[in-house]
Length: 418
Image 1: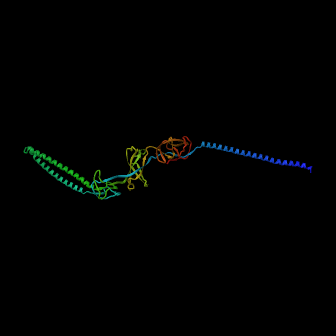
Image 2: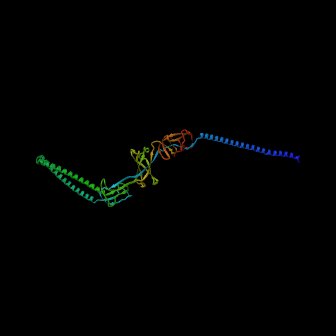
Image 3: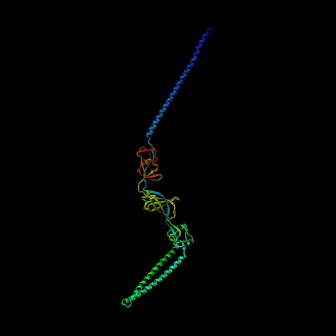
């Protein structure tokens, strides 16, 4: 046992040493693998980041190049000339073609009132009758006075005839000296006096006849009749009303308006007044009658514009056979005036407002040209322009804020302004 003891101890020691070395070798091998893995992961991440950066850089360069070479596409409209007829719409008010306020021409009481408000009457139709008994007495008195004057005239004629006969008889005797010259002078002057008396009698008769005519005319005025065909729009008397005949303060009785033709007065602005003349067609529209139009004609125009408003007074007559229109209606008058100055129509969407004024962007062979325009009239969706553009120009619709002169664009198929 003593012999084998040391030998076994040495073997045990070497075995233990081998067992201790194996784990350390395994640990060193695992550490190297872990480090290599870390290096591999780091390299992979670094390569991935470098590639991502490179890809982003290429994308930025591509985007910049695309932006530099990008040509925007725009919508355009073709400029068309305005119509030869300028349609002008203006507000107006209808009025009767003829209107008359009828006053009393004879004093008295209303015995009969034959019409009322809204009645349609004919020319010469009785409207009212006035009773004035004192006028009848004045006429009777004037007729009696005229008869008296006629008898006086006959008496003056008889006296003149007697004086003529006396003078014709005495004149030869005076010439022969058989009758004194004094008697001849008396006979001659008596004849002249009787001739003057006849002239006075004739003048008195004419004066009395004139006075009687006035009274008879006043008698006719007791019958108040319509001066023309129309409709009664006002009434201010009734049966039993006292009316006075006076040139300044006579009693107002009726208002009569002629309605078979309606008249409107409109004030045409200066820019449309040139070219306006009688005979031009007009159309009247009433908001309360939406499904009907009333054709008319310009009949009268003023020769001068109103200095304050620079408008031209124009009258339009509208036939109204069915009485669909009445006076005092608000309406719209559409005048078809021949255009005197050429102009062009541009969509309001094409106008640019900036510090340089009103402009449009015209596309010519893919290049933008900004042009100033002169606006004649704003029609809402369109503008009438007289300068800066010509027929056939293509203007950009809804141009961008940064659109600059000389920029390149690509136009879509143009659409005409309508």
